[in-house]
Image 1 (cartoon, helix red, strand yellow):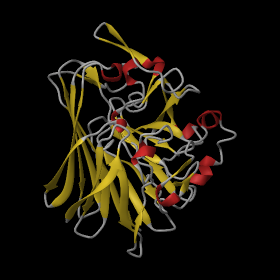
Image 2 (cartoon, rainbow, N blue to C red):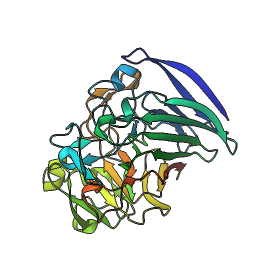
Image 3 (cartoon, rainbow, N blue to C red):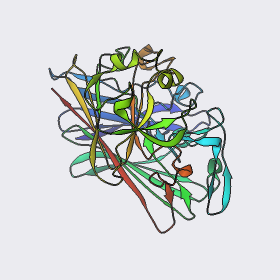
Length: 352
């Protein structure tokens, strides 16, 4: 195993950005920059043993910091996904947030954790390379209460398991729901589309949402939808319903939270497979939900000059349910000073 460092340019504010590459004992590797805690490469083998990059990303910090970044590969906080009306009440006080998704707040606001410099510390965990990232989000940051100290650990095992371990503490009651916004394409980041990939999501329900993708509070059996992935399905077969299904038409593809429930219980929540390359990715987490987003708003130049258009990559963002602060029937996203936010997700890569 090894951990190598190289410069990755500077932020618009002049901060020096470093890329850390974690190479495991098999030669597969994962690269992360300390701006946004962003995943820049995931090099894993296909069924013939050839390494390929399955993670969409950019070559320069300017794009990550720009308006068309798509939250590419980034750590998301304080709250992943949407907060309806960009405000919430907590312990009798109303907090107003920025409206950066229509009338709603998305991914923590316009200057969320994906737009911050993190303090990075290379490490070794059980003989595997790791990177520990630290961030302090001050009281009032983007409108949220409490001074929150966040630690996120990336570890890449010899079995090609990418562990992301999220931890946070606060000095005042607040809300938190961290995730990672990596865009995957197991055919290769430059394959152009995820339509030929196959997906299974082990969740019996999905959040019913408004056209603005805000949950109503109702959970719908996925078997009643055209975006049902309870059995392995080709992505193109589902995306073909975009023009005719009202929910998919509003989202321009798939952008829904699948509800497995069983918060804090380790579970295999999703499996993505490439028949072309044989690569398979299992998503294992203790979170109750996973947002499947098919990248329909992508329209940007990626690394190596590759154009990423709609459906070039897809996200499987483990999380608590969207807008949970407005739905007491959902698992809570409230973090109190006496508690520690502690959750994990593993992206396990293999072949068939």
